[in-house]
Length: 379
Image 1 (cartoon, rainbow, N blue to C red):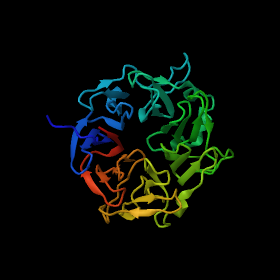
Image 2 (cartoon, one colour; image 1 turned 120 degrees about the vertical axis):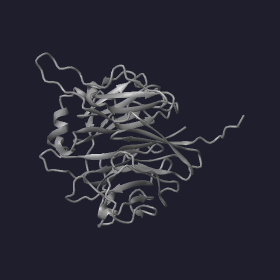
Image 3 (tube, rainbow, N blue to C red; image 1 turned 90 degrees about the vertical axis):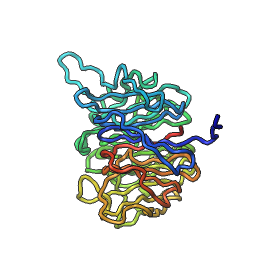
């Protein structure tokens, strides 16, 4: 019998417009194999491995005429089970006007001490929770039924082309009751009581449009909380790159140190798992081009190693010209190896990887459908 290595392999989990794919490698990350597609023809907005058990996968799917749902696998995708009660909003009172979930957009495992707890962000903006590893889902009433929800979303609802979204659902590793989430559009929010109540946390961020209320007009794209230093958060916003160090309530725009010709507008952001000062972004054209594209058709990641005080371009191995893809907010991630592996997926169906913290890139897969999300896990 072959002796098993003590070093776990890496899985890269890819959600696309027409299904999900899993790329797997050993700990050395030299050779990769691709598995799938799973859910061929379905939109998979997010595919996430539960780090608490290393075997439970959840997939946020939009299944054509069957609508939005969540699937679960406990054997790395060999078999899947649909949620018995998928994410949904509370039914409206008779004669009232309710809301319907268009798609499940974001999946987040709960606190390490809460086995089986997951959170999901929806479109339109909503938050749901599962206490049984994704089998059944219940709306978080303190958010979905808040009388302030309409005010929170405000006039920015139409900023996101395919509907407003709840994303960047974050759980403080020190306290399962301490939650954050982002609304595109609507701003960034904090709860200290497991979602029973929320307050806005947007001070210091520029706004997409002016309003008499300084908490309106905000559009965070992706927010990351550092697992080793949970008071440090980074945000890729519609208006730039920001950082906050709690207990401060004010964000600082650290993206102003990016090259002016490139700017600090984009969608994704990912963090070094051990160093709170190191983060990566993938800038997009911040001008009048929509949907966004790589600036000048010359894509590159940018890394900071000093908390945003300086940024370095990382493009070795990437196309040098005529590459006009977009990298979406869930489509960039990092593993926990040493050196750290960084990964991103493109709207043109390519998965790119760096096994040396962004110094060099290679294409792991091409010709996949339009990529929505890229996540990693240890297997």
